[in-house]
Image (cartoon, rainbow, N blue to C red; front, side, top):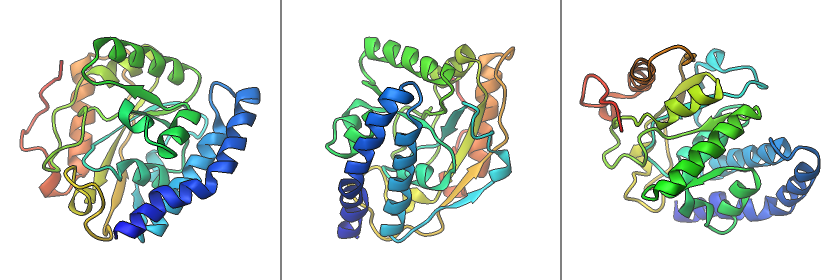
Length: 249
């Protein structure tokens, strides 16, 4: 599985990198704020990576996806490094990620994410958090969709953790809807403590829940809806042990 992971995550990316670079150059001239050509290459990369790792996630609730040209905020649970490949490979939409700055600094993978306009954050740096907030709102206003992991980091035991309010505030500021997403069973195959998959992932599901328009609603009301939607779609071993969300700071 280690070799399949390297082939899928890095080998396939290296093969696509010249085409990704061409897409980036075209986008910087003709589409600098959305970079849709780069997004397409990133999706091809993710789909190829999952296939090379011998798994393909099942998409459930596709009818709840927004129009391809509508920018929204996707908020999924987060328990595995493979969540990004899984989302990008399964969901037929373009989006940027808010990701740890360390991920964007990884050769090839991080370079591709930077070319696509994904947004880095240093979690313990207040200035970086403010800059990330600003860049995310701007990306949404330009018509991009953005994925934010409201738990703040990967769950150590696979169970859903309390959500922070930052993503809710970003969506309200940008005037976009929020789409809750449940990523099911990935923790079994690549937990946060593992650098590579333990085995070939099986029974991976990505569940899309009905969107919520946060405009005119209280943050706690929106947070509760999104949290409960994500939690309701998870298998029992991943569900939060707290019956109701505890608003984050």
